[in-house]
Image (tube, rainbow, N blue to C red; front, top):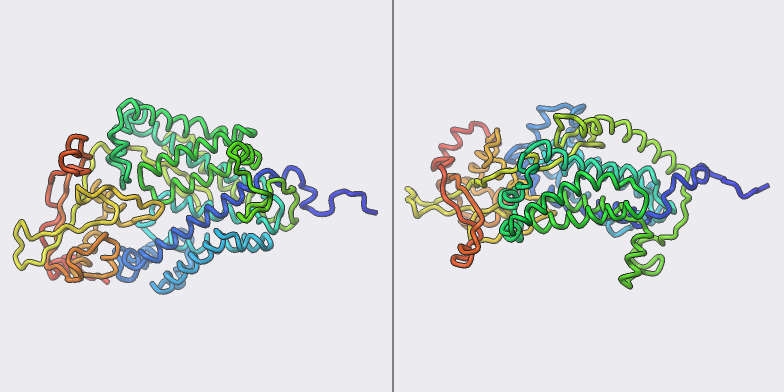
Length: 510
């Protein structure tokens, strides 16, 4: 006799396991993460061969030879040809776009789960053999979030997302924000005396179109920026786990502050993925409240594909078991990242497991006070004089003082970032020497990493590199010359060198 009681494991968990007020949050997390995965795989398609391919600046095969499967698991250890990697990346682009469109989410929950896990495996495989060109905190963050959202179920396969998985997404955002806040106040004095933004907009790796304006803002505004940063990263994260509407308000604060960072810099998909995590804090009820006041509340089940916010909490028993298993694994792996937050010697952007499932995050523990740039030049003259050199223009990093800094994020210009580290004096410069070699060879794949080929396909006879000190122009200088930057030469980093000489210096190169 049916007494109306629970009939499945999912029903037994009922009210506490399923988050009935977070259907929109699931859509934001899954579709937003998929969109950024699509961008990340496009970067692999366009940059793998010149950076990490067989003739790349740092071939992935070298990284593979210096590490083990246990330390850096990757399917590319079995097969890592350039064509295979690019084909995998194209597959990642296609599958990511399907998830953005919401097509796998219309089926059973496990279809969505397998799709995200496949993307996680492929992207983790790339990151783990990517060496210096993939040594960024947002690579681990994308891996972590890609794995996490795989266990949120789907609109077609479960009526509501598992609450534990949503809480783990908040735990991820908590580490991103609090980790960044703590590394700042523990690191550079400029964050403590509120002067960090006097420098940061000018000296950050890749300034954006509005960085000049942000830098030229009044100093009192820079103090407000730093103080606001401290509140957002050191106080607001504790509200992520508060009842609604406090959590929704905290999420909105994260979104607004990250949008300011998007407007004033280029940090690949770091800010956008943080925005996705922040928006997922907002409950369906809060979205409805905002929509009512804006007069844009859609009808339930509208063409957007976002489920009805009144959806019930139940779900399949199999998803309960799988989600509990994933949550248990992530909670166990959270011990070291949690301890890192309270450690005196906090690690920044560290992974404690080779699968990059629960990581430590942080950014700009120190702030550069000056900006130096490496300028690469070539010449087709037999014996070049001072007027025979032509500068290579990079896609994102400062070069021509009259070019306004471009907006490139969420796309990731990996070579441009390494050029910033090079100017800071980072160790290990063989990749840069190989870059000069490829320019002397007129290598088409390498030239596509740059903004333009100044020699129109003709290989130069000579290349050289000079070090310049850059600063943003003042308002007066900008009005007079139209220049966004002012620069002066500090030193010759690499004397003029031709192809034969550089080959002899480098030795065997693919």
